[in-house]
Image (cartoon, rainbow, N blue to C red; front, side):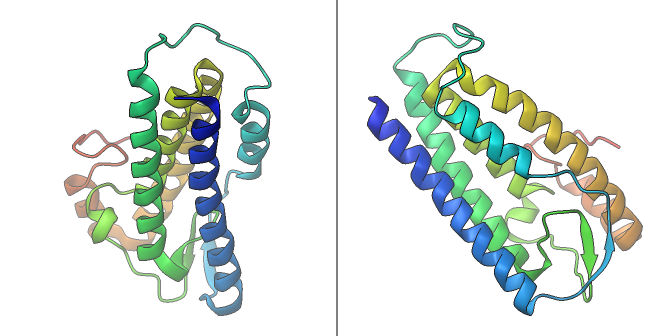
Length: 191
C-alpha cells in the first residue's frame, strides 16, 4: 500500500470515529440522563496527543520491530475498518448511557445485546483493532500506541468492571461468566 491511501483510510476511520464521539458527547450533554455515580476515569486526551505524535510517524522508535511484508498493511486495513465498524456499532447501541469516564446514569440498564453479547467492552475491542490495524499499516512507530492503549484499556476496564459489578450485582456476575471481556471467544476475565 502506498503512503497516501494508507493515511487516507486511517484518517477516514479515525475521523468518522471522532465525529460520532463528538456528536454523541454533545447529544448526551443536551439530552442524556443525569450521571449518578462516577468512577475515577482515565483521561482520553493523552491519546489525542499520542496519535498526533506517533500517528504521522514523526517519532521513529522501535524501527524494525514489525517484519516488512506486503500482507501486513492489507491485514491492518481490514482490522482498522472492522474495528471502526464494531466501535461505532457499540457506541450506537449504548446511546445516551455512554460516558467518557466509567459512570452510572439515571435509568442505567446493563447492555448485553448487539456487540455487548460479543464482548463486555466492545468499544475497547474495536479501538484496539483500529490501533493495531494502524500499526500494521504504518509500521513499527505505532507499536508504542498499541502498548500504551493496552495499558490504558486494562486500567479503565478494571474501573468499569468494579462499577458495573457494584451497580448490577448478580446480573453483571452472570454476564461476566458468559461474555468475554475484550477478545471475542476468549473467556479469561481479569478481576
